[in-house]
Length: 105
Length: 200
Image (cartoon, rainbow over all chains, first blue to last red):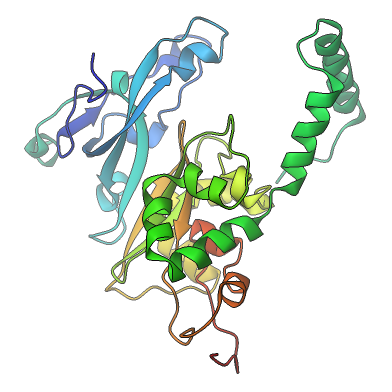
């Protein structure tokens, strides 16, 4: 894997709709309100040891960290168009997505 | 929001430190050095970085591209600190920093976070209704300004480079730094020119 990561800037991505906290003890840096949501990769921030392993003192391989941009209004079904959220998300929480798919959902 | 310190917590911390020292994992010198640098960290550092960026285009470029290097230019030791990202406000975009998961905060350049930054209310509301939160604190943003909320969830720490307010033409670095408050450095307020403040 290169420093560029799997997703280039401007790629549409979906945050995995996964809830590991339902399966047992874990430490996750992906906020609840973004699970399953569509965003756009703003930039690659670098590669950092996976906090999900660090928290349990396990060997922690480095993972690519992205800054992902989410329009604010769809997240809470309120807010003003043009407002958005910029959030650090690790690559293993992201999957390719089609921008139209959330509008259809 | 934070609970008062409990004697049993203090005792547990003391036992942990004794165990770490006994095993040679930390020593008193390291602990004292860390305590000193933590106590020395203050929002005055961040304010000075902003003021210098307003005055010096070369420093501004450094601040936006490598916050750690810009902090070190101010004499702050950033060894071992997380990367520092700087969010540039524009006439059409305002940034607000929150950590919805815990209380990530650029402590090396801003010091301890204020109590409200760690409160459940701020962490829940900043992402959902940032304009309402700002308005309650006296900052009503016009419709021409978009709000970008930075949820600080991982390895970076984030501070805001606010817009330099009108009426500060000719001001020096000290005078400018004085109007960059702690809250302005995370976008919870805007730098204000005091009534009657004159230029140079």
